[in-house]
Length: 513
Image (tube, rainbow, N blue to C red; front, side):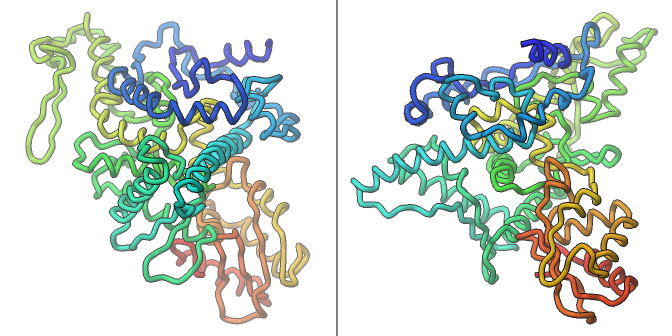
C-alpha cells in the first residue's frame, strides 16, 4: 500500500534483522487450534534452533559509518497510527484473522496500530496460548487423575532474601509445569498466568499493590550498582550490563523474566536502560547513535579518532586491544586475531572503531545479555512481539514521564460523598497543579505505586478519590492496588497541602495501606 511504502521510507536507513517468531508454514494454515497444536508440538525443536541461532549468529551488526545512513526517521512513526482503527477495531477478531491468515488483518500493517493496541494484542496472544495449553493439560489430567494446577503464578518470598527466593520460586514453577506437561522443559506457559505475590509473614491479599511493590524491590536491588550486575552512568542516568560482573546467569535471566511479567501484569517499571537494549531484544542493528546513548564519552572519543587529521599511529599509540581493570588485575582482549601486534593507523581506524564498538555493545556482555534475553523471551516470545518497534516496547515496560495532570483530573472518579465540585477536591487539584514535577511523581507513586503514566498518558489511568472521614489530623492514605486515594475532608487548603506533602514524601513501597 502507499501508506506502507511511506512508512518504510520514513524508517532509518539501516540493516536490521528482527527476530521472526512464526515459520512460513505457521503464518496462517489451518485453524487457531491447529496452529497452537502445531506450535506446542514443534516448540522444543524451534526453541533449540532459536538458541543455536543466538549462539552462532550475532544479534547485532555494528554500523560505525554515517555515510549513506539516516539513523533518525523523518517524522515520528506515531503519525502513521490510525486513531479510528485503534478506537473501533475488535483486536481479538483481528488477531484471529492474522494468525489464521484469513481476510484482512491490521496486524499485518503494524504501523497503523498504536502501542496500546499492540499491548492488548500481546495479552490476547498470551491468553490464546494459555487457553490451548490448558485445554491440552486438562485432557491429560482427566486421563492421569492429576489435580488441576493453580490458575495463578504464585511467588512466596521473604523481604530479606528477595532475589534468591524469587529465583527459586520461578524454578519451582518451571518444574511443576514440566510435571504437568510430561517432562516438556520448553513450554513456558506458566509465565503467562496472572502473577500473585505473597510476602512471608505478612497479612494481605495481592490485588495489585503487593505485586507492584515486589517489582519495585526486585528492580531496585538488581540494578543497584553495589549489586554489580549493571553499571550506572551518572551523567546520562543510564544502566548498562556490567561485563565484569560475577552474577549468575539465573540472576540476569530473572531480570528478563521480570520485564516480561511486568508487561503481562500491567506494571510499569522504573528502568534506566538505553533504547538500544530494546532494539537488541528485537534484533535491530546498532549504530553510532546507540553508542552515543550507551557511553557518550567513548562515542565522543571514537568520533575524535575518526576525524583526526594528524598522525594517528604516533598520536594515539594504540593496538587492536582493549584493556580493563577487574578484581585487582588488568585484563586485555584482542579485538581481532593478533590484535596486540596490529597498530592503530589512519587506514584501519574505522575497522578499530567498528570492532571496539562491537566488543563493547555485544561481545563483552554476550553472556549476560544472552541470559537476560532468554528470560524475556520465556515470557514474551511469540508472534505478537514482532509487531512492536523498540520505542513501543520501552513505552510498554517503562511508561511515559509526560505527566498531564489536567487529563488525570478529567478522568478521575469520586466516591464516598465527594464530587468534582467538592471544596476539598478543588483545593486538591489546585495544589497538584502547582506541585513541582518531582512532587507530582511522588504523588503518583503514593497513589498508584509508580511515578510514571501508562502508555496513553494519565488520561488512560483509572483513578478514584474517596472521602475518608471529616477534618482530622489523619494523613491521606491510598490503595495502590486500585489507584485509589482516601482523602479526609480537610477544612482548609493549607491543612490539605501540609498533610498531603507529609504523606507523599514519606511513603515507600505501595503506600501507607
